[in-house]
Length: 108
Image 1 (cartoon, rainbow, N blue to C red):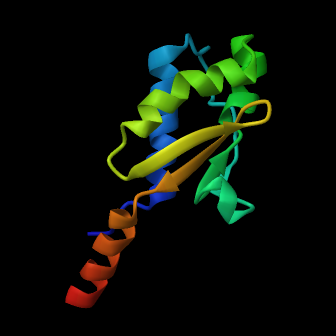
Image 2: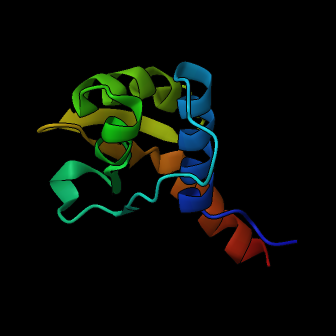
């Protein structure tokens, strides 16, 4: 069985949090970027999800980002979440996430 990647977990979690906290219109999800942060100081991953959904939700991106932070911080592998600028969300994974993956590799 394949492990779910952190990006897959984060993307699904973001959709879940958006649906739970906002009245999303019917139709296809709005595409957004989630991936490795451009600089380590921003954490392991960053996303522009708040800016991507701002027009659809008619809400300032920073307000959307603020609504997502608490839910992201509750994820078991997240160490911290921060908001930069107009609404970029940065996420840092816990060291235990990497330690557990290394142990799995070593145990075969």
